[in-house]
Length: 105
Image (cartoon, rainbow, N blue to C red; front, side, top):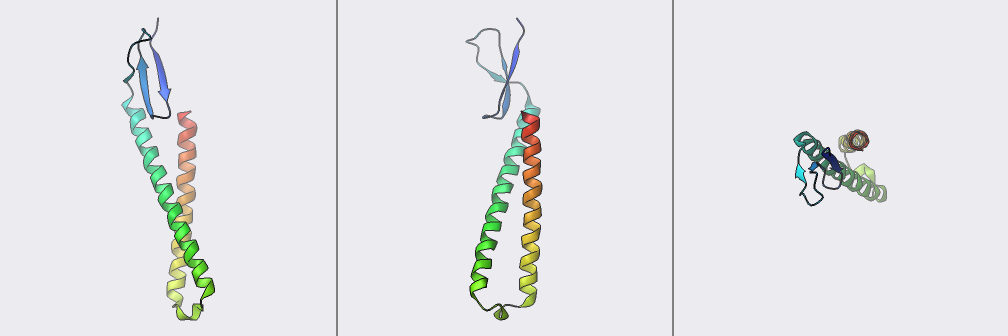
C-alpha cells in the first residue's frame, strides 16, 4: 500500500501518513509550512490594516462633529493619503490571502 499525504489546513502543515493506521503523522513538507507561515503573517497584516481603518473612521467621525477649521489643511490631506494607502494595502493583502487559500485547497 502506498503512503498517503494528508493536508491539514487547520494546522497548516502537510503530513505523511504511514501504512499502519496507528502510525503517528509526521511533517513532510517544509515548503508548505513556510507558505502557511506567510499566510499567517498576511492574516496579521490584514487585521492590523483593518484596525487602522477602524481608527481612522472613528477619527473622521470625531472630526465631523468638530469645526475642521481648527485643523491644518496639511493634516487633513495627510490623513486622507494615509487612509487611501491603508485601503489599498488592505485590498492587496485580502487578494493575496484569497489566492493563497485557493492554492492551498
